[in-house]
Image 1 (cartoon, helix red, strand yellow):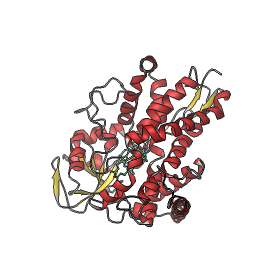
Image 2 (image 1 turned 180 degrees about the horizontal axis):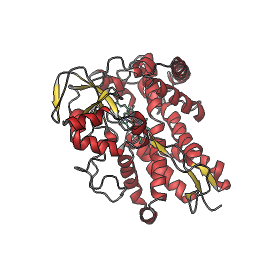
Image 3 (image 1 turned 30 degrees about the vertical axis):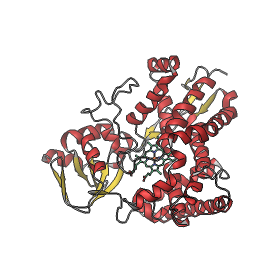
Image 4 (image 1 turned 45 degrees about the vertical axis):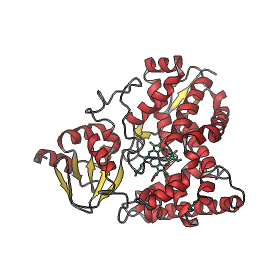
Length: 396
Ligand code: HEM
C-alpha cells in the first residue's frame, strides 16, 4: 500500500460512505484493497477475490466477534456463531425457507400480501412504494414465515429498526439501548405466545421448525434467532424491491424487455442485488495473524467484508456501475458466500422477483416516477444501502 493510499483510507468519512460509497470503494479496490479505516474501526476488504477467500476460510475469519453489539441486543444467535454451533441452529431454522417450501407453502401468502396492499392504494393513482408497499410487504411476509401472524407489520418494522439501531450503537446512546432492548423484549413475548400455540400443534413456520427439530435449540436460542431474523429479514427485501422498481423505471429499454418476457424478472432480481447490495458489508474477526493482498492483519482484528464493493469489482463485472439485466456474470456476493450464506435467499427471490414486481407492474398500469412528488428519490447507506423513498404514479 502506498503512503498516498494510506492517507486516503485514513481520511474516509462515514458521511461520504453513507452518501455514495461506490467511488470510495473503487479507489480502495485499486489502491488499498485491505485498508484500515479509522472512521469505521475496521479493516475494509473490498476486492471480490479477497472477500471470497475470507468466506472460504471461516477458521481465519470468525463470525464470533468479541464485544459484538449484536450479542448485547439479541443474545447469542446463529449469525454470530461459528460451526459446529452455528450449523446446529441453522439446521433447525432453515427448512421452511428452502426453495420448494417457499413455492408450496409461502407463495400464496406472499401473493395475498401483495394484493391486499395494492388494493389499499390502487385507486389513489399515486403512492410512495417505500412506505406504502415495500416495508409492510416484507414485514407481513416475514411475520407469517416466522410463525408470528398475530404481529402487525408496523410492530415488526419498529422492532426491526430499534434492534438494528442498537446493533450499530457505537456512540453508546442510552436512549438507543433502551429502545433496542424494549424491542428485543417485545419479540420474546411474541415468541412465547407462538410457542404456547405450536407446542402441540406444529405448523410450517420457522418457530415451529426450531421447536420440533431433531436436535432442538433451547427456548432462549429460538428467541435470539427470531430476533436476528426480524433484524435482518425486513430491510433487505424492502430495499431490493424498491431499488429494482426504480432501476426499471429509469431504464425503459430493460423494462420493455422484462414486460415482453416475464422470465427476465429473475435477471432483474440478480442484477439489482449486485448493483445496490442491500447489505453492503458485514463483520468478521481474524483468528490469527494473516496477510491479504499484501497487507498484514494481526490476530483479533475487526474486519469488514464489503460485499457492496466486491459486487462492483471490475475484475469480475465489466462496467460494474451499469445496471444490466442481461449480464452473464452471476457470482455476486450479495447473500454472502460461506457457511452463513443467507438463509432467506429463496424467500427474498420469490417474494420480490416472482410476486411483488410482476404484481405491481401488472396492477398499476403506466407506472412511472412521480415528477410532482415533494421529495425526489433519495438513496443512502453503506452498511445497509437502499432507497429512502419511491414516489410513483400510474393511470387510475
Ligand atoms: C434481498 C434480501 C436479502 C439479502 C441481500 C440478505 C443478505 C444476507 C447476507 C449478506 C447474509 C450473511 C451475513 C454474514 O455472513 O454475516 C445473510 C444472512 C442471513 N439472512 Fe439474509 N438477506 C436477505 C433476506 C433475508 C430474509 C428475507 C431472511 C429471513 C427469512 C434472511 C435471513 C437471514 C439469516 C437467518 C441469516 C444468517 C444465516 C446464518 O448465519 O447461517 N435474509 N443475509
